[in-house]
Image (tube, rainbow, N blue to C red; front, side):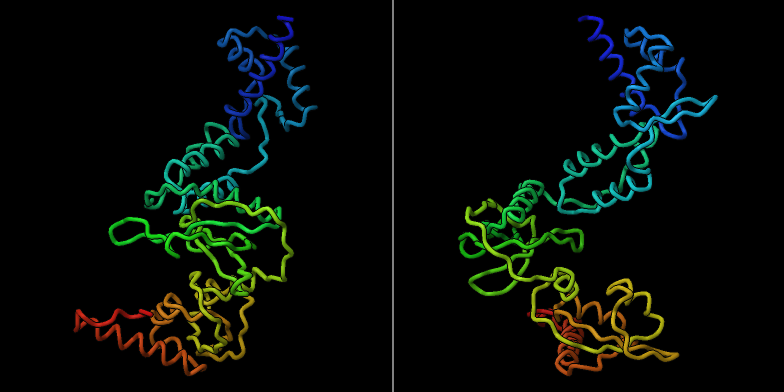
Length: 328
């Protein structure tokens, strides 16, 4: 019995060595494995190490070998893939520093200790919050699986850095349809049977999420279309519009709306784009930055809104009491 425990311990220790100490640039030879095992008080011989490596291969571990170099564990993810995931975690401002570090530590277990330092992202500024973001995601994913409504409280942060609950702290009761990421935040897209429409809510402002018990049927919903019509996740009625951009802004337009955006006219100087978007403050600000390089062809109501915002911006430079640009 003791010998069996020793064999299992040796097998697990060899696996640990391969996971932590090896990659394609840092293989390990059989003699090195034996020496490291001996340092931990585990006796081993070449024959038994070869046998253990075969057992691990048969169990599904992708252990590679190259003559005169040694053994290494081939990972499920490449270092480039792990780097992308690590940076994605780091960019999520809704996560606390501790949560981001814990998730990155989990990703670090998928590579050797030599590669782990390359997975350290530059973390953005974090805001203190007692909202359990990961718990909220778990609850919403469960509601999506079970096709049930959720109840939650929703809040804003005042200038005094205190929570102010909407609806006088009464709970929302909505049917979740999807989770969507925008501007380093996660939103839950929900349907209201009372208002007969869709809206979205920031996960880091949702509290006390509870699941209802009765499953409900879903109505057709196109998440891609919903996301395409929302600019900066501001909720407003979508507007059909035609914009004329200077040719130098082609990459900027493609970066924002994708290369499948509808282009209706192209010349040597400019091009026209048809869009259906929510006319919200972030969109007006986005247009405003391009100055004469963008022209609103239609509708006239959008021209009026942008003109009003520009006039308010100019007025605010001379009048401290003026209404802020883009204010509702």
